[in-house]
Amino acid sequence: MKGPPTHMTTKKMNAKTDANKHAPGDDNCTNTWFGRIRELVRTSAPHRRRWATGMLWASVLLVFGAFLGCETTNHPPVPPEAYLSKPNNSLAPGDEIIVIFSGAPELNTKQKIQPNGKVSLPTIGEVAAAGKSVSSLQQQLTSLYQPHLQDSRVVISVAGIAAGVYVSGAVQRPGKIPLDRSMTALEAVMEAGGFTQLANPSQVFIVRVQGGKSRQYVLNLKDALHNTESTPFYVRAYDVIYVKERVW
Image (cartoon, rainbow, N blue to C red; front, side, top):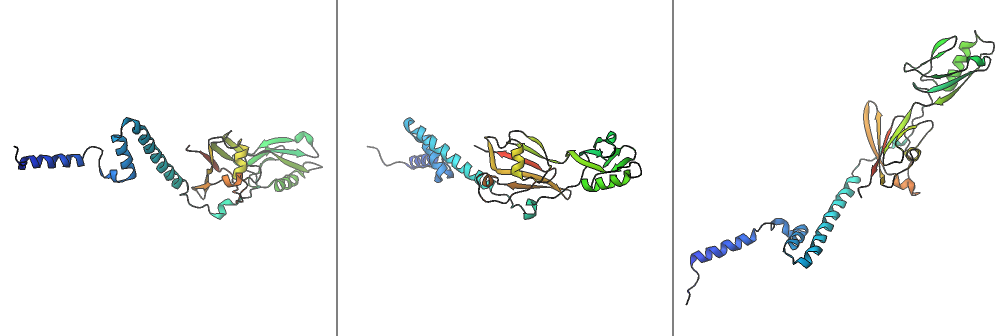
């Protein structure tokens, strides 16, 4: 007949119990949802392991989606003044103009404003054009040509605009959009062919250089697309518009 367990036997049993408590994969996270699911995957019978694995992945995706949802809404609000267009009817270097002389059609010319802001015209030579409106330049040229032409009237039209905005990301035709009128961010995207199927209209980034600093604004154009009342955001010359893709 065997006697009661010896002191050595008791120590071995306690050690075995402690080992079970700290078996691989059985740490503090078993007290959490992920820990319990992971433990279920590890210890389940084969016919239940697939279900437990599916639950684990579903939990991971839910948490990841919640994290992304928080990330997309963690953007500073767009200041009200950024929504306003900046009227700029002045000519700029790179703009192309057509100069028509009413009394001397043989002098008609098509000129691109040079980087120094000037155009080179028949008879009178270089004239500063950048920074002036079309009407003010017309008046100036009419006055300058009075000593040379009996009919010195000059008519100017703009053939090409150098200023534009740049649209990239999840749009059909990325590239430069000429800014020949007041234009909203949504209109600029539509000029670029519209959103692709992978686009996320609620994540449209505007990068604008202002006061020597680059500023970034995040717009939600989904409201405008679904006829929800929203404030239009007017782009300015040389804005960069980037449409982000959906995560899934």
